[in-house]
Length: 222
Image (cartoon, rainbow, N blue to C red; front, side):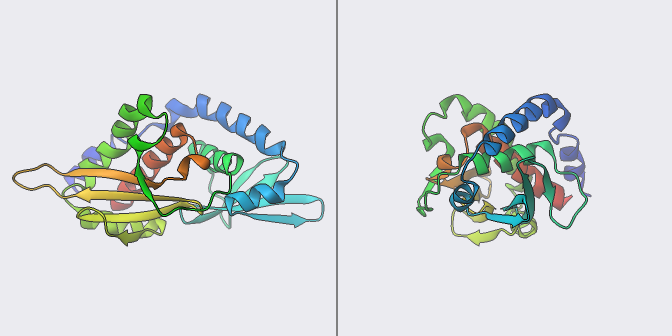
């Protein structure tokens, strides 16, 4: 581990600080998902798979290059073929995506966070929790971003000096863009979304998702 990585590792977000609020959010989202009369239609909207086994039903949803199973109506979330515990922040993102999905086709039109409707109050949080760590760790080593992103199924794209698109959910591509620093200008970064993203996630969800992706990439490099 490099000296820089050691320094950053102690700055990783402390999930314990969020357990209470995330736990409540999981409970509320679970109740919403449980209330759907037409689960098949909601699976179609989220491009997930609805499974039926006897009287039991479940949803298979792809999230950050892994398959998760959501049992219904008891709403238990497990990582397929694994006994690993699913973190609360991942549970709420999965549930919110399933609940909020409108089925809008991807437009292919990229949009920055600040261009989304009604997000002005969230801009400082988005910058501090997602963009700044991206610059700090990958701004002067964009090749590290490409290498780490393969862990999450990322694909190189053509923005900035280096960019990579990660399919967070089937209907939610996230593009991380780096402009490498030089003697004249400091490194910079941005995160782009399909302009349909708010048909699938709220502003708060988008911040948590981007923070989660960036810190997962940092952990990979450590």
